[in-house]
Image (cartoon, rainbow, N blue to C red; front, side, top):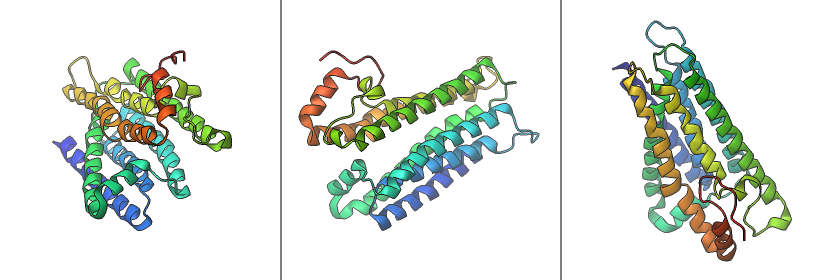
Length: 267
């Protein structure tokens, strides 16, 4: 099956990229480079599976839409992470793992990064089946998917900008950002990241039954939600805030939703 071979090529690409990420973080001592490589690598893998020619060689609307949207996602988020890495901003998640693993940190971190390559390969499935949905288009579903992704990109960029402005103010040193979108969710950047991955099932699922593989795209929002809320996103960040600012974090958590945005509770 050509799609399976194409997915395998994207998985190999991600393994190569994350091996490079491991080498760079080892040379620089900065774990912040890891996520930068992962985002750009996933963007490249997405472009590969989206733009690889279909039978007949013509570029379909969905191929162009998936390629354009995943490129926007990768450049926006990757650029944000790249700026942080260049500035030398520490990533507490990886620093915490290094402290926990001690002398075995680097070999264990290599294995962890290979798991991240695997996570990227799982997410690429949704891009592949969305881009290669053979139904005539664009359809209302396609346009809805584009709107969802653009809204997610705007939301995540807004959350990142609000957090940067908050941190840049010396008066906020030692405080937890609770303004703007951060008053509605403790992790609005992660929420909008998850929302963006909800676009791919909308584009991939063909309700006529012509493209049963499209249902595989549901794995993306389910998997990214699990990763962000249970594994490598929220848990280590909240553990760090509980450890460093226990009273401020307890008050913030009491009035602010963990993930899905809602109006803050009154103090």
